[in-house]
Length: 326
Image (cartoon, rainbow, N blue to C red):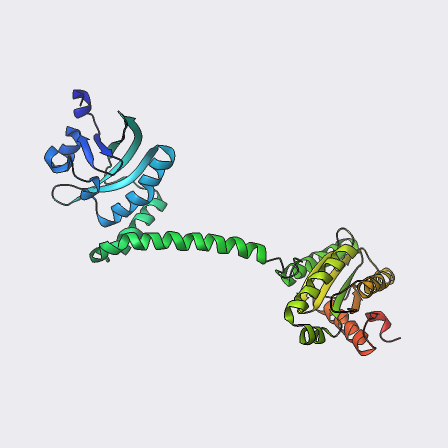
């Protein structure tokens, strides 16, 4: 090693990719109170606490393998008396005569340096958690692998939850949560512009008979096909969602009561004239058009009452709430 590097104002340690020390300068030996024989040909982690071994495995090796270098990594190393000496470590990987070597520069840190909150908190949590489990060192690697696996599973689960949070899995339509959010948006728009809008509740007639006769898989197929029919019938900007079971809801912006009845009748006829594996499928539709005194609860209640009237009056029909008294 070059004489100037031996006494450089910072520690220098050269290790193999496996972590075996192959060279060390006098500055580092003086700081730590070791001789060359204490460190060379020994594992670098032999002078680390359990917590710092975990930090080393979690950050040092992944960054070296991915980027070829590590910058300003905080690490504590045990000196010859077993005392923890804090360092900032910079490392860089290179190949020499076909052998991979990692050079590490270690800057000793003063006791009064105010570390960043995240580093201090993470170090304290790791040391507290793993100091108590010092006798369980054999299981640490297994535990670390299990944590990584669980984190991956959690990431995949969260991704699915984001998608499922607004989508009905069976039909591919938006779900009740999405519908309720859009209904609230539509009411806000009404308060600002007075633009009318209508709401449909669409229910499959005698759907229980379909499930009982053909089985639930065929019932699911009917629900999925009806979703396609509804999607093909609506305009751009209309909202179609599965409300639950065999009920679907539609929000139709800028549509008054008269037009809503016409389009609902067209929808009813489209469903009735479509080809179904189970024979004819029909729907009953209840409609309510939003007025100034309405809330989301009253609007849904009106549409539900209108749907009930369609069912009571023979099914396969359309009823608007305003026509019920007539």
